[in-house]
Picture 1 (cartoon, rainbow, N blue to C red):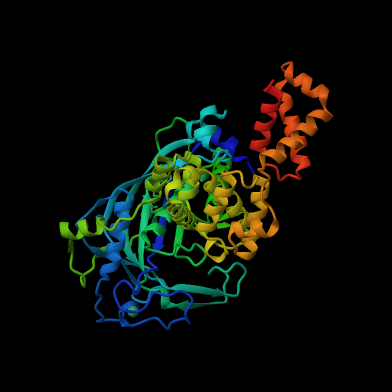
Picture 2: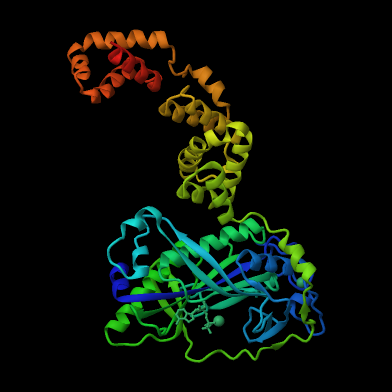
Amino acid sequence: MKDLLKVLQTWEAVIGLEVHTELTTLNTKMFCSCPVEFGAEPNTLICPVCLGLPGALPVPNKAAIESIILAGIATNCDIEQQTMFYRKNYFYPDISSNFQITQGPVAFCMRGWLDLNITEPAASEREYREGTTELPASYASSGYTTRINITRIHMEEDAGKLVHIGGTDGRITGADYSLVDYNRCSTPLIELVTEPDLRTPEEARLFLQSLRQIWLTLGISDCSMEEGSLRCDGNVSLRKRGAKELGTKTELKNMNSFKNLHDGLAYEICRQADVLESGGRVVQETRHWEPASKHTVSMRLKETADDYRYFPEPNLAPYDLSDEFVAEVRSRLPELPDEQRARFMEVYALSFIDASALASDRDVASFFDEGMAFAAAQAQELAKPFTNLLLNDVLASLNTSGHVLAETKLTPAHLVELAQLIAKDTLSSKQGKEVFAHMLKTGEAPAQIVEKEGMQQVSDTAALEQIALEILKEFPDKAAEYRSGKTGLLGFFVGKAMAATKGQGNPKLINETFIRLLDGE
Ligand code: ADP
Ligand code: MG
Ligand code: ZN
């Protein structure tokens, strides 16, 4: 298989995403009062409406409409106050009515955008957005920003789930028989479609991650890719660098993790390059990403547009949302991750990288905010050491244990206390790590641990001076060298004193003591 980065030197990848999100935080389905729930006994959460039995009348879920309007506002869309539902007709056993209620040409949310900040220095694909093969120095430190336009976000109902039994690959081809579970039928779903503005698999992954964070912040879905409440199809085509016209695209299904989305697109870009470079043409089709064998296989050709015979849903009146309604929803908009990052930078003088890392995880961000609230007047001063502990020690420990923040014994107050002990030099950073390990294990307050373990840093000036004097006596030549200008030797003396105090000496005080003794006369 070709190397993605090589391929991207010749070809520009053009990627558009279609992202489905189930509004799992709602209590009830889109048009009936059946509960929205994952993992129930098959076919227990159904009624005549969500089964689409003849004569059953749908009643729209107002909370679902509020959710999509909120989603549209958060992604800079125009809100279309006059819109309506359509029927999309198709025959497939995942829906018993043979039509899905969705939206037509005018969706609730149109023409939005999201700005992506690509900061990850390890993301080796970023330079290829601009067709340069060498990594511009500026990218390495600050990354780049690119705007991804959003075509629309529309509201629809989800279909049921088919389970294919037997066969080889868990798909309908070759299955012995299939079972159907209608529980998911008519779960409120929003579908977001992007313009073909993404240029690398890394950008696609980042877009989906950003979107997930926004949805989580809005509280409109649990966004579980594993349970299928956040699903993404990737459309991708290639064109020669500098070309304007779009190439023929393929559509990738089953991108049910960020890694699958990235790897599937990367594979597909290389596959298309192979086809084009050997004189072939890309066939417009839907392909399935197989993570285990790391390749995509054709599911169905899509030479012509499917004909779904869309028509306005006769059982639902068209919408004419009032200004007041839209304004009321707008007033509920919480602080979004991008705004949060900006606040962290402005209020606490954190770097873009630190602030982005905090804001990219809701739990981490609120832990930070709680910590800063606890630090109160000292928040400015403790923000950086607190952030270091949170982003390094805490996240590393979560990575190792597989836990989430809420499952640990850590509290924002205790972590602030630890940051404070380190900032005040009561603890060296090495001792800080030991105290942190204790906190994780016991949930005790740092002060308590320091006391119990006798970990106080030695900050007794007289004692430190005594140690320093002894060291200077032991190394008179070095002291003379220092005095004749070799000031780099300071580190040598400090190291000796740290060893003499078994690492518990306060390095700052030791430094000062040596400078005083050596420069004093
Ligand atoms: P379809 O009719 O096949 O569903 P759409 O025009 O609805 O195609 O677009 C679906 C998605 O594919 C959108 O995200 C869009 O940006 C993207 N897309 C459209 N054309 C291309 C292309 N030539 N290459 C890559 N992505 C594309
Ligand atoms: Mg489409
Ligand atoms: Zn129902």
